[in-house]
Image (tube, helix red, strand yellow):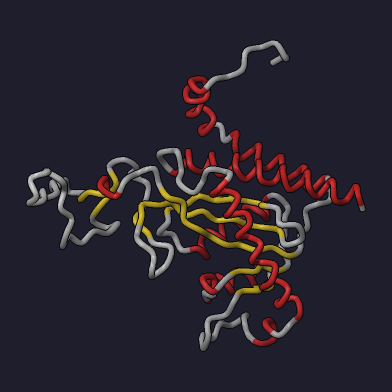
Amino acid sequence: MDLESPTLDQSNFSRLRERLVATDVARRFFDEVVNLARKQKLLSSEHFTVDGTLIDAWASFKSFKPKDGTPPKDGDDGTSMVDFKGEKRSNATHQSTTDPESRLMRQGKSQPAKLSYGGHVLMVNRNGLCVDILITESTQAEHRAARQLLTRARRRHIHPKTLGADKGYHVKEFVGHLREHAVRPHIARIKDRKTPGLDGRTTRTEGYRVSQQKRKRVEEIFGWLKTVGGLRKTRFIGQAKTQMAAFISGAAYNLLRIAKLSVSEAKA
């Protein structure tokens, strides 16, 4: 396209969206941005952090209906509104009719359950760049999503030496996986849980303390993606399209970080 060519409008993007998802253009664009950071020597291969969050699905709670097709009962107030009182709903028996791939999940014990997707990020501690981002069904354990991120990182010749994470990743299976790949687990420990490979010989080191400090920067990525990148509530139906939007938002975040880091180094 030259400067005088008409630009694409919303209908063009909507029409081409399926092709963008099928050809994995968003992921390739994201990877090229990460490669740009590598070429500018802004990407370290030493210390990383992994974390997850929930992204609200584009589906209402009323769309979460029984899989067997049993119609919900109406309320007794004459408004024909659906009455969910006393009805037990779970992902095993119910599914959203708007977005069947979304799952009912809650962020914490005190939080309400919502139809959501899981959003997982791998961050380099050195400068807070997002190295990878993965959208999953929210019922998937965080440590299994982290293994997928690390596998893809190794394919891109990124080999972390340490990995910081919160207590949700203190799982024997995951710690063992890290040790098998020569990654030191800088994971917050759950009190009284004994896990081979994550003991005082690791947690008493200065590197562990620094990783636990640095890992909190991953919240900056989640905050930007949700407030600026539009991922607080996905605008798309389905995991594949939500993943596409996540890659594009993650690439935009990285480009802004690269620009700021480049200016800082130039001044220095």
